[in-house]
Length: 433
Ligand code: LLP
Image 1 (cartoon, rainbow, N blue to C red):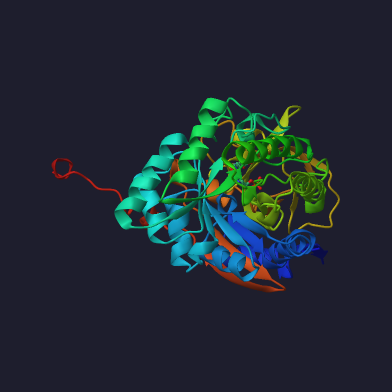
Image 2: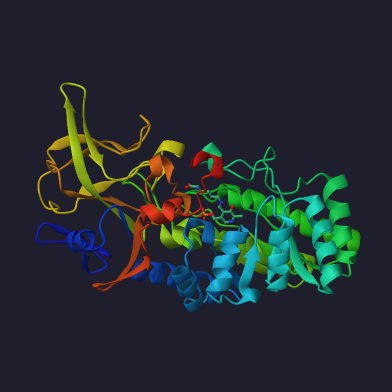
């Protein structure tokens, strides 16, 4: 366990969190390398090494920095990017182009050009006109690009509506109507600029149940069969996305990767045998499950307001700017007073952020050791979709991120300064008089 309590203090991957807060300031994202390595190891042992011709592409949208690219490469994973900015980060980290996959429902021409120039491994095409754009760019550059089609499998999944992506009414993917998908497949198979590799789906995020993955898989396998019947084309690759849920609170029942992947692999292998085809290469795109529980955020407690008989608000020095998830998805978190980690939890409080929004509440009603100004409050499982969704609302600078491992800490993202925050701002001349 990377979380430990010693002498009334919370330690994270061997580091004293109070010392981290003192040295690097708060709010502070702390990321455990040991936890990330363990998660990657589980993927290797229970998926990549267990099944031949498989890949795992870490979904960078969960958390992506130069150092994270290096870790992911070292751990033997590929990388899924969804924007020019994520791709640029990967390029700057020298991430091997062939191991990058590019998702996204509205890739710009410039983003596609960057991807094609860097010879990335795969572009996951998300709309019909995207193929025309890629063909045009490849023609101009004398290149050929690997693509997959992201399909909309038309399944519902059990998660917050904002992070459910596989249902038919979605901005993601290509609908599976015969008159839409088959001409698109035919165009890709026959294009001199395209190496058509197959299909991709992603059903949703933070899932604890494998039903929607399995339903979507049935749909994808049927499409693979139809593609063979219609075009005599054996699909070389199938990407089944990410979405594997993690533990935010005691109520979350986190499942191992094998819970999702073994039944899918069984289905795929049987299907390939029945159809007498080589089983497609299978790719997964986990994001949250690799970094989510590997991260915590440290805050300093400021103003405390006890509204008698109603609620006790404990404000911290961050909030929706460094973690939008509670405000956006009503996401639930747990935490602890890091410098009073062994003291009885006798106070019921609400941990609120410092933004000018009533909805800027990080944790509503949590039992904690009695708090006072200056205490350090740690919120758990903030490694995914916190830093990557952070904002400068109210002109709050982005926190720093430290990577910790067995008692050692290294800064991987410096704290943003006020100057850095305003460096792109320009005052028109006529306003300076
Ligand atoms: N692949 C694709 C195509 C995706 O759209 C996503 C997530 C993933 C992989 C990775 O999913 P994961 O393994 O991390 O669940 N901001 C939201 C989550 C949005 C997820 C969007 N797509 C949140 O904070 O819950």
